[in-house]
Structure formats: C-alpha cells, structure tokens
Length: 85
Image 1 (tube, rainbow, N blue to C red):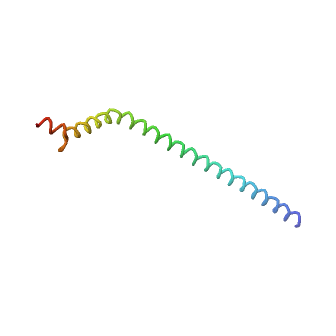
Image 2: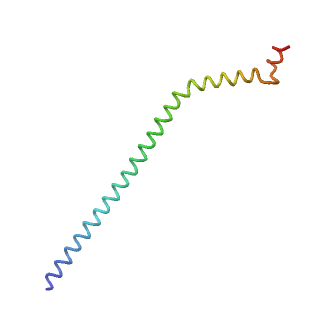
Image 3: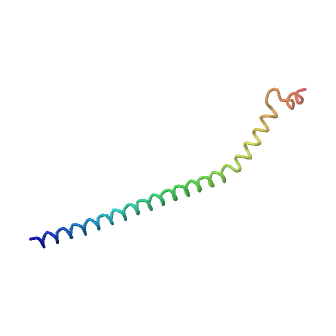
C-alpha cells in the first residue's frame, strides 16, 4: 500500500511539473503573439502614413496655393486695395 501511494505521489508531481511547463510555454507564446501583433500594427500604421503622404503631397501644394491666393485677395489686403485703386 505504501508503494502504491509513493507511485501516485510521483505521478502527481510529474503531472504538476508538466502542467507548469506547459503554462510557461503558453505564457511565452502569448507574449510572442502580443509582440508580433504590436509589430504588425506599427507596420500597418507606417504604411498608412506613407500612403497618406503620397496622397497629401500634391494636395499640400494645392493648399499652399489656395492660402497664398486667399491672402492676396482677402479683405484688407494691400494687393487687393492696389488692384482696386
């Protein structure tokens, strides 16, 4: 009877070690997954930023022209007053 009890105790200890090892491996895998998810998100944001730059580049030039135009022809502008003069 004592031998059977020792065998059950050893088996239980082995199962506990195996379970602890698997839990540790799972935590490591979850950490790796979180790291990869963050990396993919950062790369996606970078691609989006680059995409916006390529779209806003010409639009930015158009905005600058509109700003200069509005400053030139805005009420109180000396250029507008001289042209109306």
